[in-house]
Length: 433
Image 1: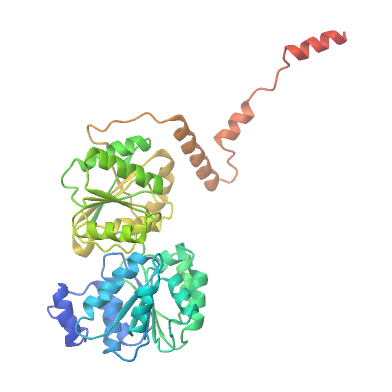
Image 2: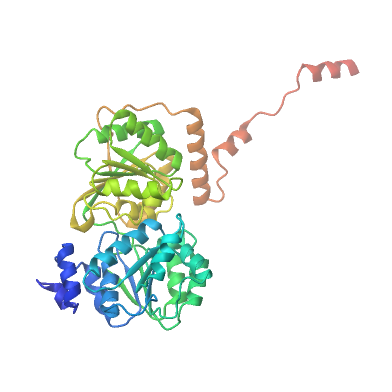
């Protein structure tokens, strides 16, 4: 689209002013395709990578259709899987609705509902919610639903991964049947296809890039590393490079996140903070705010933070562990290379994770370049217990690939020699003679 492209999308002056102040110059591909269809009243399924402007792709036409404040009950409902994403969506709505007077309220769990109830009672036009908190407050009679004319499901693939389907079905049953439905997702796994088939009738499907394709602005590399300790050493070596200016490191477990955070603090490689499900809500939000504002260099996180983090200028994402939910790889590395900026994603792979990396490469339809370990990285010896854990994991993977595979541990048992009689047995035989 040429200059004035947002005007060509038939948005009103209030929205165009907010768009200009937000610094948007040209609509992204998903915005160009989705906004006209949503304005036309179609049900829409949007498949787009993270960082491609999909939130504005549905927020702008929703604001255009709602136009001005009306009554005190929500007329549009946006459901998202995490508190962090709910807050991000609410912030985008408030930014783009600045000159419309339209009101947005965010509700989510992890905190007491008192302030959220006060905001609901004050009146609203758009409600942004996690499914659990919506059900809780609706069940207590605090959320009127009769005026809802539009429903948005954001990060639908993540909602399916987190097991929200029963809650979503309950919500679909209580909101008006006559409504516009919008579903946005980075990937289209079978669970999302089932969700789409269940609650959408003949939607327009907009796929601006192939499913599960990482953004072209993200360079990807892999280091093959023998064990946990060597991974720690490699992270230290990488962070010694000042070009790693703003880094998110993803781990599989809270324990690994805590261990890595302590290492970074001890080595002075921060400032750093850690983000996982055991952290209190206020602590999590404070860590995200500090990282967004540049007060932190490194944020160590489990996949609780893999989505819903809209932070500009993240220079690097490091996958300390390979995700076993393969779509999460796309979401993790989508934290960098946002808004057409360049970014880098580095994945550390031990022998038991090679299987999962190969599955990810099949998903994204590309081979990720392997790099040799940088000079100066100490390669630690693998402890026996870690060796055993990796051997069992590799055994399990081989059984998945070949159900007839008996496993290395099974073979060892099979080769074990039969029990020979001991001295006690020999003596007893002689006595009988």
